Image 1 (cartoon, rainbow, N blue to C red):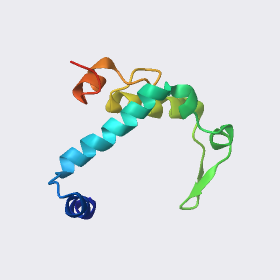
Image 2 (image 1 turned 180 degrees about the horizontal axis):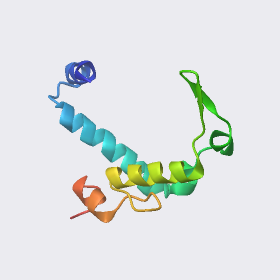
Image 3 (image 1 turned 90 degrees about the vertical axis):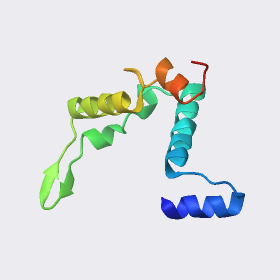
Length: 100
């Protein structure tokens, strides 16, 4: 991340911090979801991923629908989205996408 910051600062003449770049990246992702109405339906894994096992260190694993549902809802919580994957109003305000 430091290399990206250093190159960006050298090219633009700005003095971005890593935290500013992370917030900008988060703002881009949230604006994309907000403007396109992205929800849990678009975040669904292909059905094959929930049926076919994956081998790791000699063991086979299958992600169940329940496990996937738990993981995606936890991800939404951590990212500041509601239960269907839309950015919450407080997230939009914190990122200055809408007035607070």
